[in-house]
Image (tube, rainbow, N blue to C red; front, side):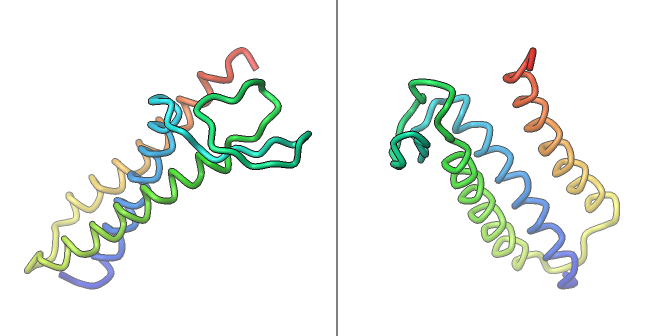
Length: 115
């Protein structure tokens, strides 16, 4: 497998892993790192008691961990592939990464509705 394909597919799997854990941590109500502006403190909470605290830092940490695991796992597994992948499969992987990004954005747009 050419190295550019391995890096491209690893990046696609990292984007998918990031988007999945970024959405799942909110949907499944996992505890996440939250910053309380008025108290100037950080806490791990499942749901913020009000809308003022910033829980996006914790969500980004969950997403970054998912992207890191998926990207490294994809890179290691793709090292086992003996030959190059066809262009059709590469476009499919890119489409899945774009779709995961779009669905994660739509999930949060829906949660913020009606703005």
